[in-house]
Length: 304
Image (cartoon, rainbow, N blue to C red; front, side):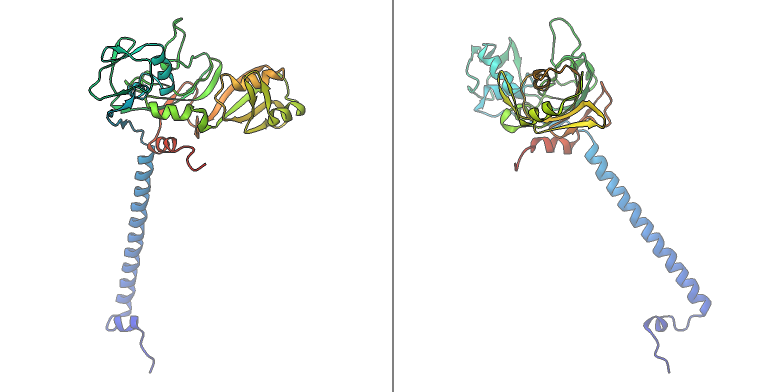
């Protein structure tokens, strides 16, 4: 006699039609559960992705006792810590009515600090804005000649006072970060952190192989040797289109490199700054950074 399997024992007493119907029902139920499981997973992934994409204004920690004056001023959203140093040395900051010329002067939470005669207090919310800067806009917070500045382009972004991290000259376009986070600004502009920037350059004439090799080797300028991290022709058959990666923060450094070899830079566009790109941000438009981008900026360069 043939030994019955476990399934046959389970199905004992059922008619063939009943067993088939039960199997069909179980199959339908199994498929339904798989579909529901997949849908739940899809929703979870979508929710996670949306959470990462959602722009955030991060709450600033409170000012602390014994905080250096330049750091306090940066926390107030007036300018970066580096710019605050110059501002203090110029005698434009007071603590409890006394002019302070030492940037490292320690202040207390209860102290009253003024800059240019106006009382300042730490900002409550930190804002991070990525702008795809067009040409003909100044990278400054104000201009005595009333020319267009990058702040004109982000008026709808925030009510907080923000300022550019680093500078792009008037005729340079591309990625620009604006924030009221003085600590981050200090980090991204300090030479020791060697923050990488990538530019697309358009020259008035083809870059020769000799000059290409010379730039890669290092260029002697009036303020010292400048080395690039990478250099490449970006379009086949057109040696006027160059890509350059550099970490120097010297003023107009990319233009100065090519001008040193007799080239006129017709177009200069920063396509990457500290890992940020202008992807999906049209010229003249802006977006808030995501939580992940802010986190990565704060840890940028660690582990080098």
